[in-house]
Every structure is written in C-alpha cells, then in structure tokens.
Image: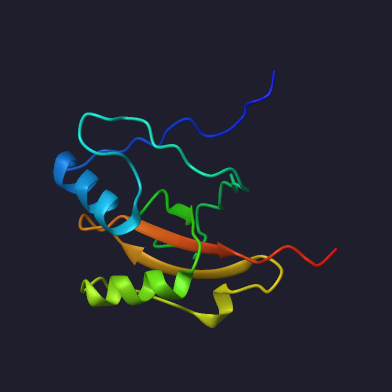
Length: 122
C-alpha cells in the first residue's frame, strides 16, 4: 500500500506559538490556534535526500522546507513590505520546473518557495 502524501511536518521551536503565528500570517501555512489540520491543494511534492556536502542549502541545517506557491512576485513584495529578507538567484529557476526564492523564518529555518512552471500546452 503506497504512501499518499505528507501527513505532517514537525520540528522543534524556541517559541512554538509565535512561530506558528508567523507561518500563518506570512505564508498562510498551518491553522489558527487549536486547529491542527491545514488542508492544502493537491499538486506535486518533491521528496529528495541531498548529499551531506550539498551546497543547495546552508550546511548548518539538516533540512529545508519547500512550499509550493502561486503568484511568487506578489509574495516577494509582501515579504519585503514586512521586512523579511528574500533571496533570489536566477540560477535557481528552471523554465520546465519553475521559479524559486528563499526566506528564513524568525528562528533561522530555511524556506524555499517554489512557483511551479505552468503545464505545457496540450
């Protein structure tokens, strides 16, 4: 029987309530306090271990959260208006895969935002 998707993402935090609020306020990820289910849109999910010495993300982190988004440009503008640093590198973008930017949450955890490429015309 195959796995049908990711059921949760759990990680330690110095301020779980504050960090949960930050994710909800800035990314729409999660749910209001007391509600634990976040219903997300169906779509592709990449599950990929990286080599120990990969430079795809910071060496001092064992993981990086990648979130699928729509309208990346609007999200970047909102982050910048909120004082959240956004890193973009044209080399990260792949026309057949999509566009990418990176931010960090208030505890320094890396987050990659991915706007998938539109499907090819039929």
